[in-house]
Amino acid sequence: MKLLIRLIASALAFWAATSLVSGVTVNGGAWTYLWVALLFGLINGLIGSLLKLFTLPAILLTFGLFTFVINAAMLMLTARWSAKLDVNNFWSALWASLIISIVSTLINSVFRKKIA
Image (cartoon, rainbow, N blue to C red; front, side, top):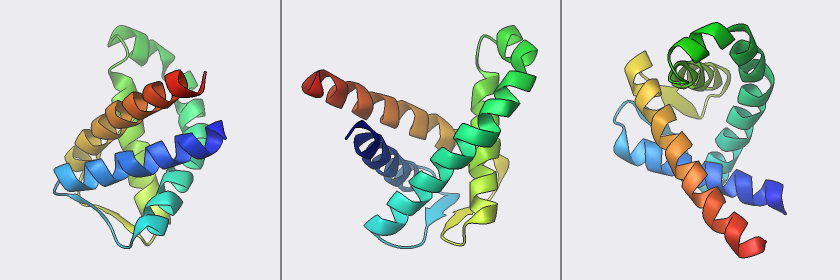
């Protein structure tokens, strides 16, 4: 149940990011947003975790802000591997990753309080 809520929260976060950032688009409907969110979660969970481990000194030096750079890179990698997601440039990916992080954190915290 928690995994499904997190997937829906990520899909809504992608919808918010594509609505607010002009350089990021998802080509399709609700199922496409769920697919892109699932793919982004897998890529960020596997490859992103390793990158965060390897760049731990940079993350500590920037007080965690370098994490958004890694998330932007994972978003661009997701766009490269998915035909349904288009990211124009790094700055669009950076702003979109920031919005995705904020929106998914807010939605997950709301549902965490309601379920618990």
